[in-house]
Image 1 (cartoon, each protein chain N blue to C red):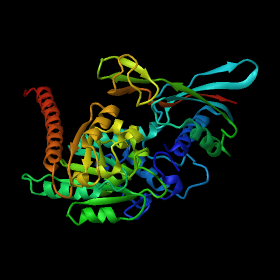
Image 2 (spheres, one colour):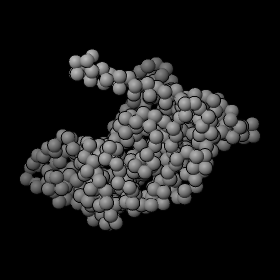
Image 3 (cartoon, rainbow over the protein chains, first blue to last red):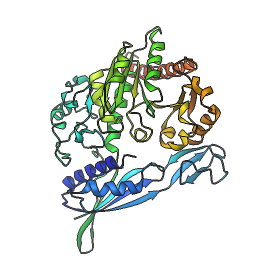
Image 4 (tube, each protein chain N blue to C red):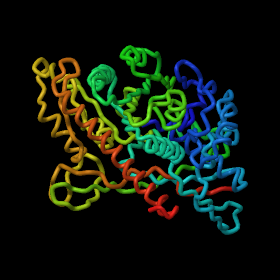
Length: 113
Length: 326
């Protein structure tokens, strides 16, 4: 997906926090990204370095905490953990699953100086 | 580019103009002021689209919504041993800002009884033709259904021109380098278009099955349009979009006999991604299946108006009670 513009969004939030909290440098940014959020981690990491250049987060480490995907199975009614939207239900093998979690894209915290 | 307004690149254009040239919204609109701070919104507007600096200066970049984290948990800090570094808790969704604009749009639609639909598809699935045919069918209804269209495309005003040829007000948003519409662009577009109350607003998103899935515009529902020539496995290849859609229209079914497609497999694949989605097969060109789509639209619009009426009745009863006239 638009990983570059997600990074612009991250930078905006970080710069707002920098003004509010009065820090001048970010050492580490921790993100929580759901497995079903549609975010390509590799592309995000690449875009991150480029977008953060020249900002308070120049050179910051990006740490990504992956959150599991969850889905409701229409066959057995269970809420199950899935890694991919196309995975069958691990409980009953059913193919009709409605995602019910795992689409998060959130900044958890920053390590700052 | 700014995630939520695309204005960092200065390339978003509404009807060929940069949004800076937007008319000052009427105060009663609430403009983009989510919290009713309309005057702030108006003051902020000219600065907002000032020529971008290399870095996004968010201090100048006030969209009038106030701080997107306003009311959020204040940050907690704690020392980390002898190092000078500390932790700052953020807990903010990356697209939080877009979501706030979307909420403002949604409230605006609710207050005006407008059914807003976000039409998403690949380029070339026949969205604009479908829209033109839909408009033609709705035009004969009595009482009339007020319609409006916001067209999103990377470049040109061709689609808006096609819609305007039907007599329905349309506004073109060009996203420049952007790959999707976002809620902030829609807010601006609403200021310009001023869609009529109690009608249907179609928002034709940029032809792209990836990015628009993540950007809530404040719509009542996403309508995904797919044409039979795109292959039965398209829902599996672009699952995020089909998971987000409430209804999937399979268009160009008049071509089905010519391209060896399995219509049932289309439906099955949509069901694998989104078991709750409604699938409708139609041909905008021949008109086959269009009745079902028009019925769905009118049912949704009427439901929305009835809900609005129920809320107004409840409020009226409360006011009468407060006056001692209940």
